[in-house]
Amino acid sequence: MRSRRHRQPEDPYTCMSDQPRTETHAPIVWANVLMFALTFAAAAILVPWYGLTHGFSVADWGVFAFLLVANGMAITAGYHRLWAHRTYEAHWTLRLVYLVFGTMALQNSVFAWCSGHRTHHLYVDDEERDPYSARRGFWFSHIGWMLRKYPSGREDFRNIPDLKKDPMLVFQHRHYVPLAVAWCGATTSPFSSTRSPTCGAADPTPRKIPRVTIRCWR
Image 1: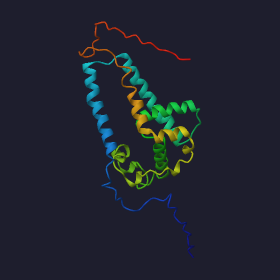
Image 2: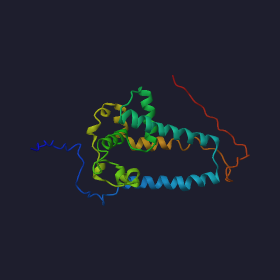
Image 3: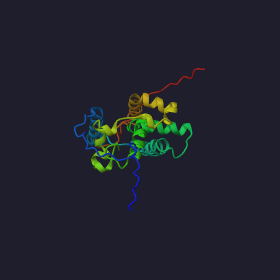
């Protein structure tokens, strides 16, 4: 006689969804669309134009290389490994460095990034709940999920109670936009060099350096 197999009840938080997607025409997130469009236009048009008309100094290339590494490490070692997965502990000074350069990377606050990433790992096999499921294509998993308000990408910070206890992360989340604008803008002016408008050739005309007086009050 065949034994009746007992069927375990499905856990709604771990089982895969079997409902068809209804988010094809999700509302567009215009702030993200404009950010991607403007930064792409600047990288594709303004940067080459500046290089051809003014040239890039050694300091320019040095700052570029430094920020490339610093921003990448802040996201990889900070946002991802330190805060999202809690794979190690870090001194507050290192966390502050990660926070500054992670903000400059323009990948949203630590709260938003880590909450979404933890949701991604929880529902990695579920197309409906994974915020950037690879099953939905290369474009969606890398860019498309940020351009529309998909139900799968709805923010839910209940999965980051540990991060909410860090006052630095709370401050960054509350003031992310002004911090990103200020810190990114601070890197655009101090390293500009005097150039002639001829494909980066150095201007032989001597320039007078203004005297700067610094007073220290005691």
